[in-house]
Image 1 (cartoon, rainbow over the protein chains, first blue to last red):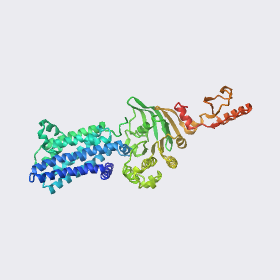
Image 2 (cartoon, one colour):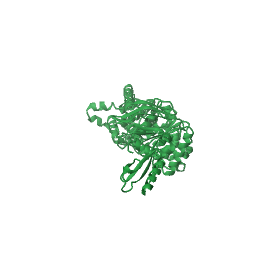
Image 3 (tube, each protein chain N blue to C red):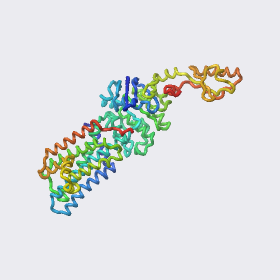
Image 4 (cartoon, rainbow over the protein chains, first blue to last red):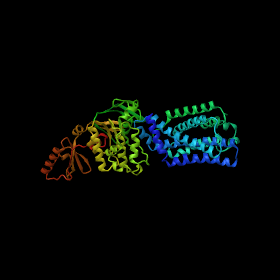
Length: 247
Length: 292
């Protein structure tokens, strides 16, 4: 546990010095997560249902950005720069290295999601959740699962420079499925929505909606996150690469 | 200590290491020599627990480097041939960060002093030269006061003074009982530091033994320009020809040179460009890999 925490703390120090992380993960998440609902609140004052829908859609997007994309970019860069290899040359075991890195990224994603949410309560008049603990639980679990999937997704990333581009479809699909781009999904065949709800962000939004309104199937949301956790762990266990491809 | 017995490792169809065996004892510097692609780094990576062996046995401090990786890593220092740093951290921040992962770590200034990098503590890693990065590598490898140290091309890119300082550190660690497995392209480095060695070629050990004893068994060389009008068959000792240069190999090259000079004096000839050399690791190396 001491070594796990040491890796997480080290990752945290590096995160706040990393200009790419600060511009993509932090600035974009705060800008999108606060700016869009704030604008909507100005355009349609009093429509708290619309505001909540937009917030939940953007919550899925910013968590994809700050957890899944950040983990994929971060770990593929450390893999290609042979930093993961150097970390493995210490007394740290593989779980401590990956677990510590992901714990830091998930913590930053939770922090961003909570900052966005609180700002919207205060500045845009968004309704507070009926069950705040459930909301926090789904945000924390969602950040952990998305970070894990970001690490697993590195198997599809051949070079670190391609990490953001290769991971971007997750962001786009999460936004589309959760309504972050607005109700575009209603213009598409119904099966598209059904499929996109199977994404991990579908589980997060379902759980968060339950926390706010008491509507939605919380067990289904938990099942969704559990299945994605299993997928992430299996991919990490059998396919994760600690070093760049040699050819 | 390090024990390797029948170690084999392949990448797909390519067999990188073919059933090699050797042993390095406590306090010994063991040099693993060979051309690029000979299998040296693969051997170190198996011993350091980065990759499993396909067959054979590897033991470090009596432990299996894969199964007991955590215990092995906590007692070993590894200076990898290639490994990255965080470029925006300073030298001392890098060492301090690594101390957090290293049980019973040396103080940062001590590790940096050993590696000769104390005066560059405040420099960002991205501003270090290649040789200075190797010294930072060494500082990290020494942090945990290891019982076994793997040094893969440790002085590549270092200036002569840094190389000499590194040799002193290696000698001092060996004197304290650290087992050191060294790979290097600098044969003079291996000859100065190692007490025993093995030469690898295409995944196999082609020569091995104690450094001094092995060199003592090797023939020396006497070479000279063959005088005009003289055929090699007329010389008192057998030679091989490379252009106009004749080379005679002999267990005692001084005696062979005396005999050749006496013969030349009798004939009123001069042996231009006469060179007498005792056996060197380079001769042994070239002979071992079949290029002599």
